[in-house]
Image (cartoon, rainbow, N blue to C red; front, side, top):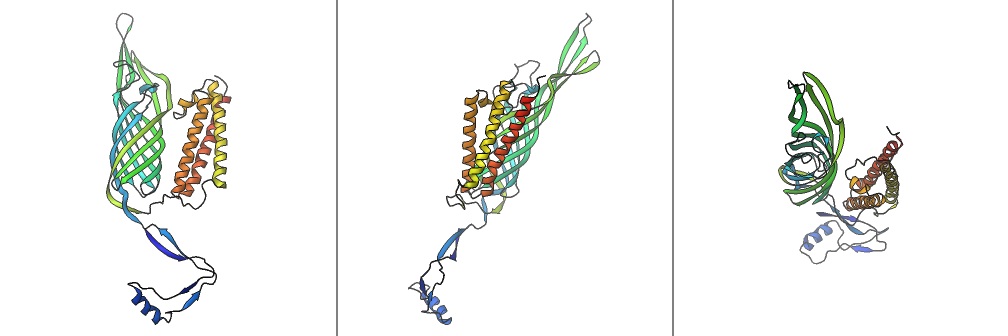
Length: 378
C-alpha cells in the first residue's frame, strides 16, 4: 500500500523551508537555494495540514486467477424420484469448476452424485429411482475483500435418476387376467439453484466456499401404461410440478491460469458513513414491515391446511408463531450481519441493496400468500 501526501487545514502555522540534518539535506539545500527559497518562511493563510490517504494499487494474483477447480460435498434433498417427499437428506460428492471473468463475476459449475440410491423407496420396489446425479452451471456475483467474499449464485441445470419408473406393460395371460411388467430407465428433470454463501482465501491458490440455496426441480412423473397394445399416460401424483429442495454445499477450490489484476476492497472500521444512519434504519424498518406481512399471511394459509413451500422456512413455520418469530430473528440477524460486513468492506451500494432485496422478496411472498389464502377450496 502506498501513501499519498495531501494538504489540509491548520490556521496560524508558519513553515520554514530549511531541511534538518538528514542524508537528503545536502541535495535538498542545493535545490532550495537554486530556487531562492532556502531559509524563507511562509505563513499558511487559510490553513493547510499534512494528511495521508491510503491508496490500494492494483494487485495481480492475490488469491484470484482465471480458472478454479475443486472438490465439493453437499447435503442434498432432491425430492427423490417420482417427486416423492424425502424426509432425510443424502450426502452428495463431486467436482466443481469456475472461470473468473473479473473480481465480481464468474461462471460456476458443479457435478454432484448421491452416495446412495433413492431413499424414498425400499430397494427392489417398483418406485426405486436408482442413483441421483445433479449438474448445474450458471453465474456467480461476488463482492470481495483481500481474503473474504460474499456471493450470490443462479445456476440452471439438470437432475437425473438412473433407474426411474417410466411405465408398465400389461399383457393378457390367457386366463382373463393380465401380466404386469414394470419399465425402468434413466429420467432427467430441469433444475435451477438460487442461493448464496461466503468465501475464504487463506492463500493465493486456495478458496474455501460454503453455499446454501433452494434447488428448484421441475418433475414430470407421467407414466406410460401399455395395456394390450393401447398406450395410456398415467400420472403418479401431479403430472408436472415444481419442487423446492434445500441444498447446502461446501467446497475447496484450487486456482490456475493467468492472475487477474484487481483492487481488493478494504475491510476496516473507517467507513464513509455511520452504519446505523437514517438510510439504513429506514430500509431495515420497511423491510421488517414486509417480513411481518409475510409472517401473518404465512400463518394464515397454514391454518387452511396449505403446506409451506420454502425449504428454508418450512422447518420453523410449522411450529406456529414461536417458530415464525425464531425464523424472523435468525433472518434479521443474518441480514444485519451481512450489511455490517459489506459496510466494513466499503461496499456501500451493496449494503443498501441487501435490505431492499430482502424486503421486496418478503412483500412479494406476502402478496402470494394472501392470494393463496383467498383462493376458494376446490
